[in-house]
Length: 308
Length: 327
Ligand SMILES: [Zn+2]
Image 1 (cartoon, rainbow over the protein chains, first blue to last red):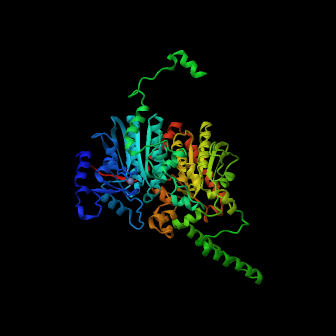
Image 2 (tube, chains in turn orange, purple):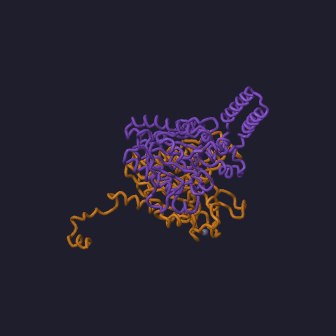
Image 3 (cartoon, rainbow over the protein chains, first blue to last red):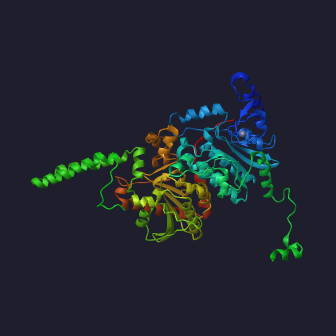
């Protein structure tokens, strides 16, 4: 069964099969916008890529849905689905990490917090990584680090652009220093990808913080953000503790990051695929663009006009 | 360096030792007053004190090690620079942020004849100095200054030595505004591009991304009582235990000690400290560091630029624990 069929089956047996009287506002049929409170028919909300048609609030998107949004039908080839996290530190807080992994896997159907693979985006081959906030806040441990590194290495070999959709609280504490080291490991793979003059575009969605911000989220050749996402290094409360004054209202939002020079462009989700495709094309001048006009063969008048 | 005249700052687990030492002094005084020979008893007490010190420092819990790593008298970057280099010119200037970060210092030193670039976090030596140094918590400008100096070193073929000693990168409003995340991320990638040898040593606290921001190298060394952690045990306890008082449990669970990190194949080498910790004999500790740096530099200098870069890549490439299940 292809992953695509799997999505289709999952949707059939998914929340929409629930009976109406279970809740006042059944998940499957209606969705109440967490920003404006307006009820939207769930199917319409999904069709609008989880963006509220009323207020344009961008609701969280899980990795399966994001992959369908960004890749062309039946082009998705997942990579490294056989990698599983292990509790190598024997870490136990209020719950053991081993139990946390098992419970989260059972609840989400995911093996860890990222899905990676090759696919086509408007016919353009890309290496795509999509983080999933549902899996322990999209936190980065060894599996996330390894899968992203393998994705980037493969993209370098096959000379394709890399797109990583970020949604993460940062490094996963339950794997200690193994998690922190993944930041450097991914950065190393990105250095080689960049050295090969290939394009890398992270897409920062809500939230992108901590160790993810301090590594691959901020290393894009072009950094894209979804509107009104939280993007920052330190947690808001931690920053607040260092101050006596109130933080600015837009602190650590996409717009704040854009205004301070750390994001290149904010793209509404409904325009994301189109914009990514456009940017990829613009970096491959032989695709879909008219032939480059050689300046030296341009009419003399043009050249002199510009040098005046 | 802590001088002998200054009164020692005792950690709570050193109290039994301090009491024993107080008794030795008392016995001395009594013997002198009464003109009796007690050298045998004193010898015995001193042996016991030495044994006790050895016992205490050889079985420190992670939380206790953290206290040693954070000891106010623990030598910081400029102490080591002073002790190991023949020459030193500190350089400032990140060329952009508009400030000079006193929490991350750097400059060119001569180490047994060889010019090297030394960079490190700098904690203060007293409260006033600590406020100036922001307790060793560097700002984006600090990381950018470090990168600028590393690029300089690369152009002139100077090996890079980084000394890590920070509770973490500074988390203030200004740091966020100036792109703390970007500053660290940039260093992580660019350090893989450098041709010259890079040796990183955790001399005290290795606090999270703030440590890693100057922590990508061909070798990672740690002093015996240093710690290196993904998040401070206090922050970890607050988040995972929802109880900041559980920081000792978090320190244990996070596996932050040098032996833990050697087992996890993150660390290359542990540098022994004098019994009583680095601050009890700073010059001796500095000699240990100097010798280890020279040994590693000798090895790394034998490699070509290409070999070093590839070695550095593979060193980090291997880090991580996971299982691959059959499909
Ligand atoms: Zn709405």
